[in-house]
Amino acid sequence: MKSKPENSPLEQASSSESGFRFTFNRAIGPIETCENITSDAGALIVREVIHRLGIDRMLDRLNDPRMASRVRYSLTELILFRVAMLTLGYSAQDDADKLAHDAAFRIAAWDRSGDRCLAERLASQPTQSRLINIVSADENREAFANIAASPLTERLALDIGDGDEERGTIDVDGYPEKTYGNQELSRYNGHHRQTEYYPFVAGLSLNGDFNCGATDGFIGAKLRPGNASGAADAVAFIDECLDRATRRFPGLNIDFRFDAAFMIADVINHLDARNARFIGRMKGNAVLHEMAEHLVNRKPGPRPDYSREYVYEIGKYGAKSWNEKHRIILVVIDDPPVVGELDFGPHWFYLVTSHPEESMSANEALEHYRNRGTFEDRIGEFNAAIDLNLSHSEFRKNETLLQFAIFAFNLLSVIRAELEVEMVCLDLGRVQKRLLNAGAWIVKRSRRIVLKIAETAAGWWRLALERLNGFMIDSPRRLRRISWRSCPVHAHLSTPHPMME
Image (tube, rainbow, N blue to C red):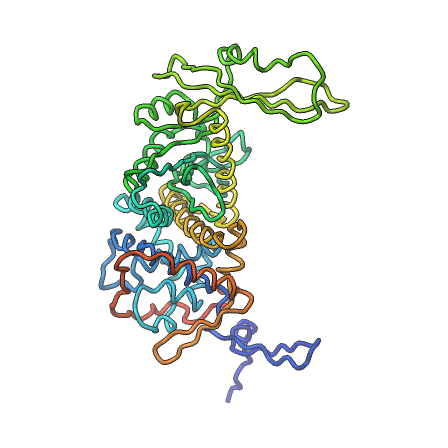
């Protein structure tokens, strides 16, 4: 009779009890695993935000071409799982195989009533890849782009209704998204000295302010080739964002802010044709320098030892390619001399705006434009918190991944804004670590699922849940009552060892 072979190291590592013992304190017993302990309890908060804002109803409208009789995971469940992963900081698609067994993700992603979700596993990485194929199809792309912006728009709608008497500002900019491999239309960008995509993102904020507790986020995004110029395809993207905002808020007065790359004739003329106000930085030219010459030269006399800033209206200007003339504002900054350095005089820049002087003075226009700096910070937060990885070979699929990332960022931004009402300004990374990446023990009691949150996160959770109680749509969508299909035979029924993933 053959003796039973000893367990392999992989089998030992995946068993429920480890033979390892701590030596610094021998009172610590053996290490055991528990499938209902999670370090990502915040996935449930993400799902609650989606539910309370009515976004799950929008997901139902997407077209699913799969044969219904052979589907185990609905399209809504797959999207909920992927967005929750991104919101909690899991950007790699391979993380799906591990998180498919996490108790919090299982509860948050299943779109079916009851407590059986704790006994099931979520979709694997290959299924998540097929999800991108479905969402990137022509019949779903526009609808999903609207859904990606919906956490922002639906949260704003609770405060401003259709936007009457309110002003919203849309900031537009591009940023480099580095690529690795041979992704379609990724190109070498000489300015950034890397192979990349160069997407547009557009942020929407009320009155252009990003105060603590104010809701803001991305109203749109568009993926572009890495070698695209600063304003290539800008007109179509501006139209898309403007239409999306005005459809949701027909009474909202929209204006735009841009950097100098967007202040070209095509953009300016198009905004004029749509009666959309704008302000942007203007590149200097001989005509503008002549208009400003008498204001940028110092008068004779000693210079003060503090910086001085002057704001001037220097008249209206219109290039030959512009359909209309617009106000030009000159901003002169004169810094005190530095010992040992040559004095090159003051430096200055120009702003061009279609806001009339009676509704926005030169000083107010400068303050309004400078608030755009916070939008640029938002792009940095987006890259840090979501850590987007455009790894598909096809351009349209990478564009869909970008929309998933926008969806996750907007959810994070809504959660952050609710916390900031009671706390100081927060960065998204802190929201993820303190609130969403919280430890919890999930217990079944009769037909209820009880969440026991780690004490270190309890204060953040109490505040977040109190704020969530403050908004709710009418007649929220109910969970589905559909049959459960068995898990495929090739699926890991328990968490696979890292070396086996």
